[in-house]
Length: 71
Image (cartoon, rainbow, N blue to C red; front, side, top):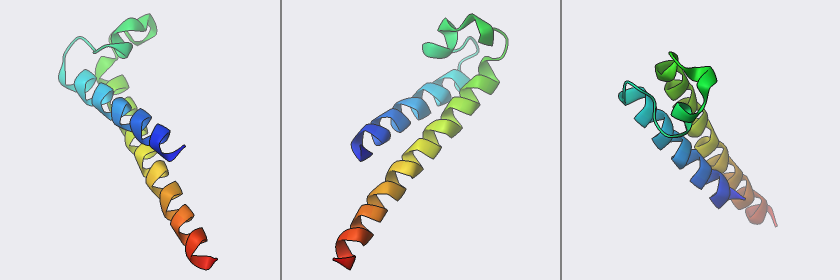
């Protein structure tokens, strides 16, 4: 599960940064018509959510290490 969260988080950060840098959106954000005109804010939000996902994966792995040390 940790590896899956890391992969999803990194892809989301790449997607969000790419959308924030480009003027017309990027990949997924460009496919959603709801976000027309809001590509910058959507890109920033996706990048932040991706970073939070990466942090959650790191937190999960540190919990597993702590549980193993207690045994």
